[in-house]
Length: 147
Figure 1 (cartoon, rainbow, N blue to C red):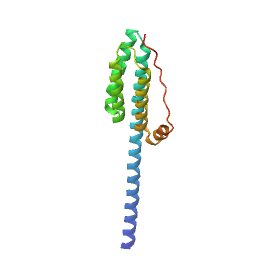
Figure 2 (figure 1 turned 90 degrees about the vertical axis):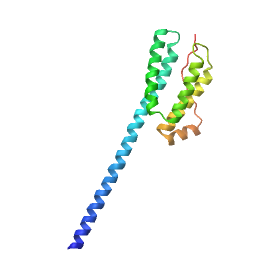
Figure 3 (figure 1 turned 30 degrees about the vertical axis):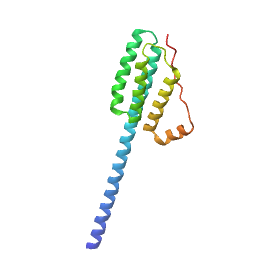
Figure 4 (figure 1 turned 180 degrees about the vertical axis):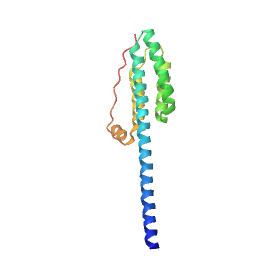
């Protein structure tokens, strides 16, 4: 009888341990999905803020709103962005500050934005990003000429 009790207790312990490990792994996966969803939102907001900045053109009112939106987005990005995204964002901001109210090299801007998107893709889905990089895809962005 005591052998049966020991076997039953060991079986219950193994089942409880297996369930605990499964729940722990599911929670970890759920957390990663939640983080990726939040990062995707912030990265999308960053690209949208840059587009708004480009579309503002010479309109001071639109430019002020676009700058405020970019500043708010950068605050969130600083909290969740990967190292590569933050470096690319620094390059972008350096470029924008360097060419404030001047004509700028659209190709250089697109190269910086491409690097930013590549880094964001690496952060969100590394395996898919690698396939895209191997295909040497160039991302396109709208940047109207400054007036």
